[in-house]
Amino acid sequence: MKISEILNKNVPTLSLEVFPPKTDDKYESVEKSVNEIVELNPDFMSVTYGAAGSTRKYTTAIASNIEKHSVTALAHLTCVNASEETIRKQLGELKEAGIDNILALRGDLPEGVESTDDWVFKHANELTEVIKKYGDFCVGGACYPEKHPEAEHIKTDILNTKRKVDAGCEFLTTQMFFDNNIFYNYLYRLREAGVTVPVIAGIMPVTNAKQMERIIKLSQAFIPRRYVALLDRFSDEPAALKQAAIAYATDQILDLLANGIDHIHIYTMNKPDVAAKIQENLSEIIPSCKKA
Ligand code: FAD
Image 1 (tube, rainbow, N blue to C red):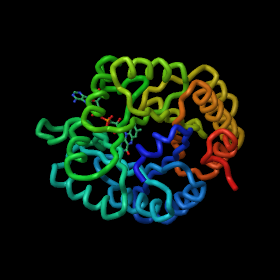
Image 2 (image 1 turned 60 degrees about the horizontal axis):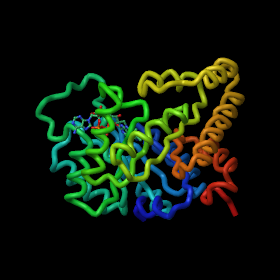
Image 3 (image 1 turned 120 degrees about the vertical axis):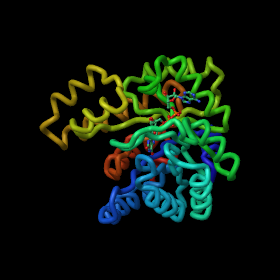
Image 4 (image 1 turned 30 degrees about the vertical axis):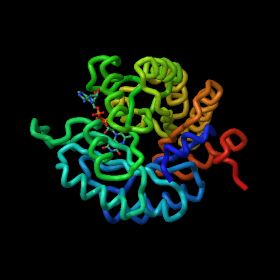
């Protein structure tokens, strides 16, 4: 099913993200986690794509497996360093694997690989155009409530985000954020700039302190004092920190829903127990979270 249809039903949704293994020997354990997350029957599941396509074959295989279990899959696809022919081939593979939805991303280059001026695709809007040209896919894009780290100003970043929508993105998923007020302000500015597609709020339950260090480095997300205090207090107690992270994420989601934001995406990090607990906390609030 196309994700645009799921989002247009006017019912709150909760989607879950998984990431593929980096190497063959980890495939089985990742597949096991993915299958456990599939059992939770979320509104859809997204599958990330390794930097510059390093885990491409696994993304397609995992997304195809999700679809076989009757859960809608969203395959991420990046375009740095790719030719139009490579992308066209990949789109064919995705279609053949039964995938209807793609998150079109520029991607980051892996460490040590230099960018060049003769890249065919410089930005995600160009990839979106090509996907729309070659296949009948529902396409989504990424957006950044605290601006993309390379963007000089949030205003230019929003205008660049609008280019993706103008190129055919039918929904946007946000980078993770930990302070809902930042998201509300951003959404207002997006709407003011004429971006009208559904915006899915990306929530990350950070279950260990090391993970938080990496997140701050990569996304430059603002961490509210309250979250810092949780990390400080429970950093040596893994079970307590996990419970606190789930409670914080649930609280964020409830506030979003209360403020009319209907679509939530959880950066599950291949943790079925975390995803299950959040679903349980929302079982009377989001239809897909209610279990028989
Ligand atoms: P773009 O939209 O191209 O934006 C990148 C920068 O260029 C921004 O500063 C923007 O303002 C600017 N820009 C955009 N368009 C133009 C234009 N036409 N002209 C001039 N400037 C422009 N990475 C992976 O490798 N694999 C994944 O699976 C993955 N999944 C992600 C999922 C989500 C929800 C998010 C938020 C990010 C994800 N990323 C992933 C990270 C992403 O690849 C990086 O953030 C990357 O640096 C930017 O990708 P983008 O698609 O947002 O790029």
